[in-house]
Length: 194
Image: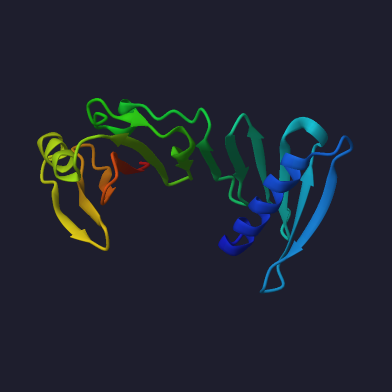
């Protein structure tokens, strides 16, 4: 499908065009630093843009109410999709672990990505508890979780990773800037498809 640098540039332009939306829609061709071209077509005021690469492969970007959805199919028919921000809503069942008790979801920073080989989830939440307490909670919930807490450059950070019993890769980051009232918790889970 589209190469990483082309995706980022095309995605940014698509969001800009979707946000500005014209009644008739518009086409913009973007040339990457390697000479590869992609075309971005917006669909008027619908909040949708389609990105097409030189091989005719397409990715659709839909932006509404602060949520961005991307989806496409590569030349092998492999579906790729991503949902970010807005009402992305990641559940404990999708993560395979509970949310930290009393934590609050950071709606704009949630993300789901699906390819033909895996599903990736990123849940971002906040709590008034210290990073070490967050790490201790997840050590009780995830077998074999190894991690550490460090203080540096004006922040305290807990980082840990392990495999869940399901085989999914689990990563935790809990960080708090010195003097801040909240700790930001990021739980990432990567599930390989069978």
